[in-house]
Length: 289
Length: 326
Image (tube, rainbow over all chains, first blue to last red; front, side, top):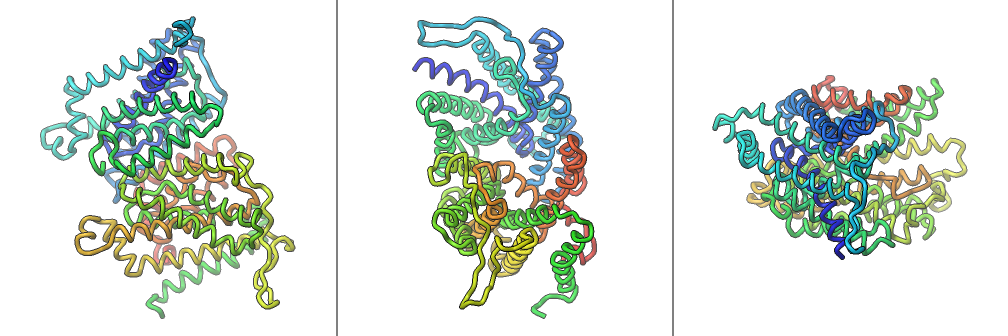
């Protein structure tokens, strides 16, 4: 049982980080970022290249992942999303753009990094063993702690800095924020960059454990959508809860039902649909997003 | 005549001539027989996309058409292989089954709106794929891979439909079948949009509360529309299964659901024939780019991004004159 809980915490902390970026972008721009999973994969590959290939220290490689994705996110927002949002009759057109970008990033990943599964050397050796009740490699614990630290940092940033306040104002009401003198265009870009950066950071962290490959993008996006739905779209605390809940459901389901294969995911999906039918806005969300 | 302008009739005429006579002639002349399969796929995907477009028409983003296409494909396959039905009866049965599933699922989930509805339909696709893997009747991951070609039908001894297995050129037969079903689908769609129900849908698209307050039964209409939409999905899926003669849980996945939605966006949400054009451009474009090998995806997605960047309201928002959009 302790093992299952530990796995739940480990999975939940990673999932929460992935969901955070997605929900941030959604809250600011009302864009469902289909390319989030691909951004995560790119983050993984950047860390792989710097840390695994060129032997740069791991922390520095992580920073590189963040910087790359932040720049990428800012460019995508500035030159693609912003003009399309302005020019389209229906907001949902951004979905096509997001899906197009997802395809594009997939193609770029394929051309630059190839389709092989890539892994990096372990950052810490050894396994934590508490009387055979909890067995967990040290690197997983480290990654889990780093993920939780990043989430705390992110929340702090959103709560106590000027940028964070501007972003929260923007998420609440775009027009009102603009009237209060927030530079909407600039902060949309910063917000998108921040969301993309979070995806890159998780990618960089997880490459040390699960490795990274081209096919991970799509499924990651879907999982992120689910977490966002559980917690409520566009709400930061909701994304964290969603990540933790999904992480625990997966850990418990895989432990109890492992002999039935994919039945865990089927149960998760079905219970999610029932949950949303009863509470459409998720745990914390505003009704009708 | 029937309230159509002569220009519209001319457009329909040209279109029908092009797909029934023009395309076979061109393919015969160039010898690219593989285009039959591509164009048949386009026609079938356009049927499913028409359903997605219809849910857009009541203001819902539907990323779950893959689920209904998969349900349709499985129902038809099981009826033909295990129950020994004729394919032509199993085809509407597949559509109806998909519609019934849509009604049952739609009752709770159609209360959701916007992104929530979009995401739950996305999850629905995944649910159906996983269910197909888990159920015994669908044969799990192995799928059903021995579907016979559609048999002929004769009424009182007069053959109405030929036996596909006895034909030399099944590709052409499938092409015509798919095109006829597609034309019927879009005729139905056009009729629906220009009917009283269509007006009610437009009122829902603009503001559901307002529509409800002036007496539109929105709960009823959205169920009906979702059922019709899924009927199209089931129909397209069943036909696809019959052409491929096999159906697997991976026949229609999340990516396909997303593609159905993209077809509608690309063609333009304000135009009945938008999804048809969108499907043609997306699917045919993908096929044509095959020659670029590993750069196929890159070029394809770049074109997609450029189109949406400069024509955010869909391809048909550029008027090619009246001939192009009937």
